[in-house]
Length: 395
Ligand SMILES: CCCCC/C=C/CC(=O)SCCNC(=O)CCNC(=O)[C@H](O)C(C)(C)COP(=O)(O)OP(=O)(O)OC[C@H]1O[C@@H](n2cnc3c(N)ncnc32)[C@H](O)[C@@H]1OP(=O)(O)O
Image (cartoon, rainbow, N blue to C red):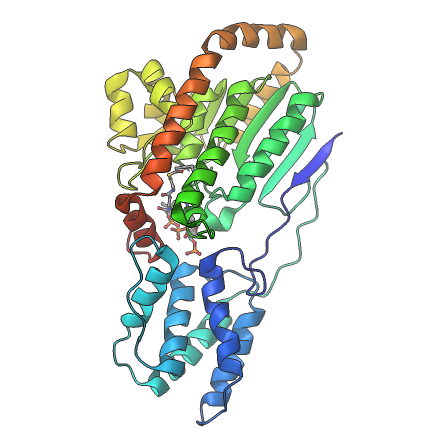
């Protein structure tokens, strides 16, 4: 039984800077710790700062921004920085949060900081021991890959973030597909752990701007996306999605490149590209109109209409819908039966079905990635990401 776990468990902690938003609070800490303690509540404040550094659970961007703003107000007073540009997403979010505190006195900000930390520390659960790995599985990692009974399963495993896909996960999925294309499996399955199948691209993937600026970020993301989608276009074995819950963005669009899509009746299919200032990817601008007709595809891809599992099945995006309570049992029984079919016949049938459209799919992928590269540099996209990060907007 082959076994592979991709992606290190990235437990959130202030010592490991995964993104600028994770970093923004920490950046402030050393500045403060060198200062002289002047007031009575300063000790509590410093103790709260130390406590925050020990948190292992990500408190979320909203809380991190609040902590950052209160910290700056407590130590420096009202916001005294020039307003960052629209594209400077992280600094803009920080600036907005700090400015929102207006002329709140330093002592009040310090007390609010201490109160916030103590309420969050009280609410957080003690760390639970890792679940023992079941046979053929390993716990942990943002992506878990197992291979059993001739089925390789790639599981999105970031349930606290609704399985949003980080840049590392894109790379790990490619590695997993590469391994699966060569192992003894007959089928490759993608599924999600937790209540979501996947909430699409992790929107914080756009926030860590490299020295080359937003243009470089847009370019490298476009290259990564193109390579990622190419892997699905060229994958040589049947691809199956077991959509255990809501699916968003790229996790929906690439379903057009799958052979079978089995969905829970809890699943929904949502591609909110226009509200995000984006355009379709995953070859969906070609596969969706082909499978559901141009006007149904337009409703989804241009106007962001969310489909239920039943609607997605009626449109041809989903193969079959199962009651959530029986999804796992029914689907895995069926998939195991499919693995008993003569593997060479399965591969040949798939290849003759796929080979004719492959070149076209690569061209569509290239075109979509170029359109997205430009979209990522737009103010519409920057505003949407900023709105999400400051939690004023959700789907
Ligand atoms: C290399 C680049 C390739 C780019 C390819 C392009 C792809 C395009 C897309 O995929 S577009 C789709 C992008 N996805 C979204 O816009 C979804 C955004 N998320 C939401 O709207 C909501 O979170 C939700 C509707 C999915 C779930 O709402 P709910 O209220 O049930 O849960 P929370 O909002 O509290 O979410 C729990 C935590 O998960 C974080 N999170 C969820 N989705 C994402 C995401 N896509 N990116 C980053 N983070 C996400 C959310 O922030 C919460 O975290 P917190 O607890 O730390 O606050």
